Amino acid sequence: MTDSQIFQLGKVTLYNRDVSDLYEEWPVPDVIISDGGYGVSGFKGDAREPSELREWYRRHIESWSRYSRPGTTLWFWNTEIGWATVHPILHEYGWDYIGCNIWNKGIQHIAGNCNLPTLKGFPVVTEVCVHYVRRAEFFVNGEKLTLKEWLRYEWERTKLPLYRANEACGVANAATRKYFTKDHLWYAPPPGIFARLVRYANEYGASEGKPYFSFNGATPATQEEYARVFPVFQGTYGITNVWNHPPLHNGERVKIPGSTRYAHLNQKPIRLIELIVKSSSRVGDVIWEPFGGLCTVGIVAYLTGRTAFCAEIDPFVFHMAVARLTEYDKNFSQQLLLLDDNVVEEVIDENAR
Image (cartoon, rainbow, N blue to C red; front, top):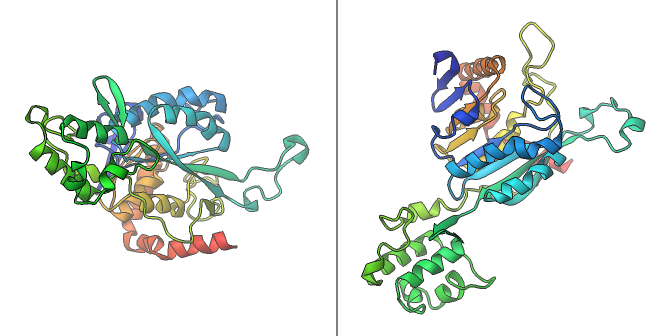
């Protein structure tokens, strides 16, 4: 890979490559933020219509599933019909739907510039950013088990009676009623309880089956490894799934140098990307931006201390993204003012109007 194809600043790396060639190289993601094809022929390589998006995304979703981990969070940006078209593929490959968030751009998005007789419907001023989490799945003897099934399977392998799970967890009866039940009352044991369970099983369980509760087949799972099965979500009261934010027609919108034309058809606001980055990751976490565009995710990651890997296939857009990230680096202290707690208050104010 030549220097012109890669740019690194701190913990953020931008690639001018087809992301399909990079998934295997990138470290396991804690968060994936996808803003790819919308099925509107919006950029070179985009699907021509929403019906083509299933196959457009399939190879990417397959890679996301292969190289992510249980608990990885996915934010999937698209039109309403684009998301509805792709959702079955996401579900098929192990992504659990959490919720649909709506970016309401408001009336200024159309500003009267629409032909109602031609549209024969209400003007669209929204996009969706749909929240998914990679489900925990375990493959045992060719069979796929859920976390609920795997926990019970592992305990049964110890050949210990079920009631002793309560002793292992240090509870009266929660293990048998909650952690190992087969019915709808099940819930996963907290990480601290899981650690006690693992220690007990490997100390008192049948010697021929050890290790028990192992993710790699060689050593018992640790409390920290188990905790990562569950996604980060740090929501803020006052923020709902409707995000009122005007379209970018201000200084944040990137234009082609020497032109009045925008550099990217559908640039996302920094404030919305910050909202999802902060809510679903911690400082130092790994974020993938497979369809970088102007790499807004990379910029937010840089300003908030995350690690980001971003890919943009178009050389011109890639170099615009590099220039943009470089500019944010020059004004680092000033840009941080955009990314403080006042952002949350402003979004709440917008939602309250």
